[in-house]
Amino acid sequence: MTRVTELGYVGLHVSDAQAWRIYARDCVGFEVLDEPGESDRFYLRMDNWHHRFVLHPGTQDDLAYLGWRVPDAESLENMERQLREAGIAYRVGTSEEAAERHVLGLLKLHDPSGIPTEIFYAPRVDMHLPFHPGRRMHGKFLTGEQGLGHVLVQAQDPAASYRFYSLLGLSGAVEYHLQTPMGVAKPIFMRCNDRQHSIAFGIPSEKRLNHMMLEYTDLNDLGMAHDTVRKRGIPVALQLGKHSNDKALTFYSATPSGWLMELGWGAATAGAQQEYHVLDVFGHGPEAAGLGLDVKL
Ligand code: MBD
Ligand code: FE
Image (cartoon, rainbow, N blue to C red):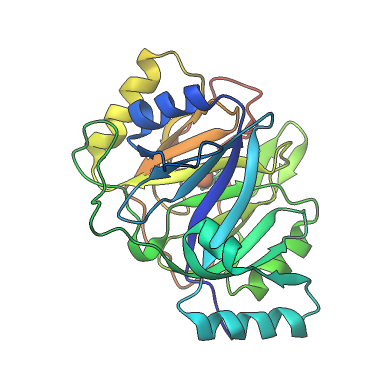
């Protein structure tokens, strides 16, 4: 079986590009990149990849696409066969579409909730343009073989999403039973490398994207992000706390698009055996309600 190896890139529709540029630089530490002749979009960098995020300014505020990496052209062909045999509709991206994403090849399809999904190989890595953070940083973003982070997305039918992402080569299970205003949620967490999870779903969400998680290698960078978010009065949905599954110290604050950014540090790598939890280790106390994560952690 061919498996995706990481969540490699993410596209976002954003309605307030200027707010995003400021937030990305000052709060998170992203490098903002503008390419000549591409006034309809801009990029966010976290490492030496050409980009990890593409922001498409417009009227919406939601996920535009998720990009999952496979090692090489042969793996992409094998993935194609895997999708065909499972009866999943997909399209081979044209060379123009590959160039648009700065990759050498890709497939385009949709997950069962309609989330545009791309499977690609060979991202452009700009070794001549080493990552230059938008604000001072003590360390780096934890990417590499663990991909850019994780997303919690909408799943109208979690069992169907589980089957879909399993077909892409991710594995996982229900890892929490959580109290929500709408009853007990049983979110599923799925992985494709050492990162404890690259995608999760099963918490009711209005937007395609509930939150995005990025991880710093140095606790001081999480502290600086937290200070900046607090100084600017950005709403915090869940205060600093430590998750029981990935053991990461994180907090969740609102992005200029309304969905949440989970910034973290210190996650453990994925264990071999499944377990589930009903509460977190400590913290993650609720603060600003109505941002999509009114769960008791
Ligand atoms: C996570 O990253 C998360 O977002 C939730 C809700 C629970 C455990 C880990
Ligand atoms: Fe998360």
